[in-house]
Image (cartoon, rainbow, N blue to C red; front, side, top):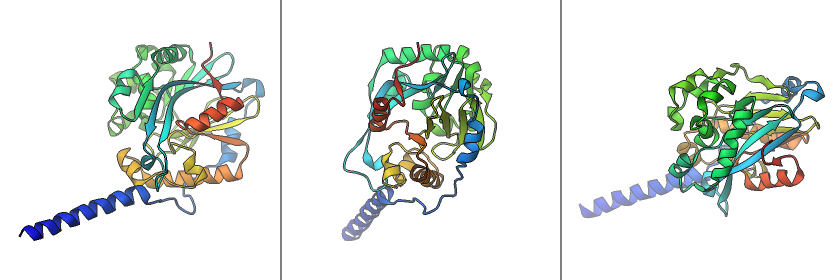
Amino acid sequence: MKRKKSVVALVVVLVVLLLAAISVLYDRLPVESNYVLDMRQVRELASAPQNTLPQSINSLLVAEGDFPSCLVIAGCASQSYPFQFRVFEIDYGNKTVIIDPVHDIDLHRENKPLTTEFYPQRYDQMQQAMKKASLIVLTHEHFDHIGGLVKSPYLAELLPKVRANKEQLTSAAAVLMDYPPVMQDISLLPDEPYSVLAPGIVVIRSPGHTPGSQMLFVKLRSGEEVLFVGDIVWDMDNILRQKSKPLLANWVANENGQQLADQIRALIGLYQSDDQVKLLVSHDKDQLRQYLREGLIKDGLAD
């Protein structure tokens, strides 16, 4: 009887190890994508008189973190991935649009050890920037992209400026967010694949990472184009190495892995075929530093 129990235990361990290996090694990236990203239509919607387009993209580092490679890229990598949590600001000169207000200190502590450094003064600066902004928009409804709004001491004042899609408001429980009831008063974006948020800014629906995930295309006055991909990938390595997120990440983050894989394949195709648009990955520390050096992004928010 003891030998039989030992064999059963060994089989269970082997099955668990096999599932663990599959969860981090299996790459579900398709050869062709079922996700349609019509850049011709996106650019038509972003078209506007040059003097009405935004003049810069600003960004402020509010917090930092560190993700295991086996949560970022199928097959893992030799290193962990340092994360930056940045709020972004589209600056028109006479008005601003805030993208993805970063979480507060309480949410930061709740999500350790993935979160590490937090900068309270910069968080306060972000809150003041939201008060001055004309619009606030989210790539998706996870704590690090919406927490600075949900936990804002100025929430009632900010709500009239917020534009969200329906799923960003209805899927709070699924992404472990607790919204105050007043969040339901937010103005909804059109339920369309593409919609104009402001001159030069187009919202692109891309559910998968969360039900309410969306990309944001920004055309600057200089002619430069930037596509905020949110958390479709957490690092540009997924695009460069042509790898999906691992199944483990899909399970942990409650993602629709197949939708994400199709979107990653579409972004790989865009990266390879279109030199005009720059992909902006929300948390990729190396890419963000490069964009700051090149001047594509300005460090700090508008006065």
